[in-house]
Amino acid sequence: MTSSATPDASIPAGFQTYATGRQYELRRGDAFAVVTELAAGLRLYSRAGVQLTETYGDAEISPGAAGITLAPWANRVEDGVWYLDGKKQQLDITEVSRNNASHGLLRNSAYSLVDESQYSVTLEATVFPQHGYPFLVRHRVQYLLAEDLGLEVRQTLINDSNASAPFVLGAHPYLRLGDADVDQLTLTVAAGTRLVADQRLIPRSSEPVSGDSDFRNGRRVGDLEIDVALTDLTFDGGAARHVLSAPDGRSVTLWQDESCRYVHIFVTTELPGRPRAVAIEPMTGPANAFNSGDGLRWLSAGETFTMAWGIDAVLVGAG
Figure (tube, rainbow, N blue to C red):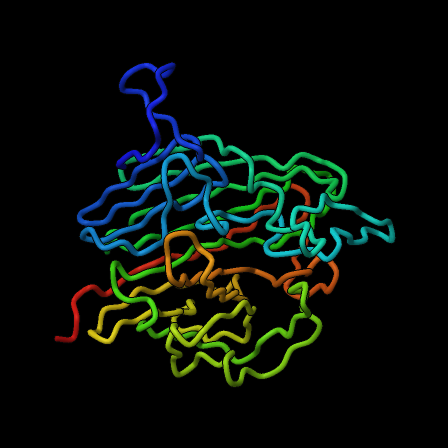
């Protein structure tokens, strides 16, 4: 992809460095994706030159966690504290402003290459036993450009420990529809329940969706600035689909399989260079699952678990 980094005279000509490590480029037909070594992140997905995810410069790490994968928990753990067999576990506080442990243990980790082809790449990183998470697990992420040119992602957790390990998996992509005015897009999410969170974004209860949290019939993005987890998703053919659509009939969709019973919707005006941005985050469990138990899974020793999600688009308008 085109470099935006300032050339460094100490680097040999023709050798490019990136803040997010090695860049893996996938091409199939008019589909193009860039996956990063850092956090096994999705830096870009496009079709026919139409950008379908938010991206960032060569010298930057992902702003607002754009595109990163999340393991062994997604979202937040309150105060970084949870209990294992009655014993307090203290995770590092990585969201200082809210005193939470945020977005797992691999956000700043390099993933190693497992397999690569023209259409796909598989990366893997290890979580070693540590304070707050005394388990040995591997997170393996495969990106694939499918025959229909959609992007498919599979995140697998492998437990190399001698004991069952708790986990929540997730991802943090931001969707867009090329240069379409994001405020004029409509967001549709078939979810019946929202999690009611406090000021630290820790869920305290749940209730049926209503008002700003009800996306079942579509909401105009320009009317939104929201940070909310939703569940009771409608699955059709084994997948729940969340759609950003334009008035001219074009759309981009994030789908997630039935292992992902939660989705987090984050509409923000704070992503650099964008008037408004829309993150649609598939998750197997919500924030603070290590304490609430909601959506929390335990992976037996030697076992694996896989969640799947992806992005596709309709780029021919109704007109």
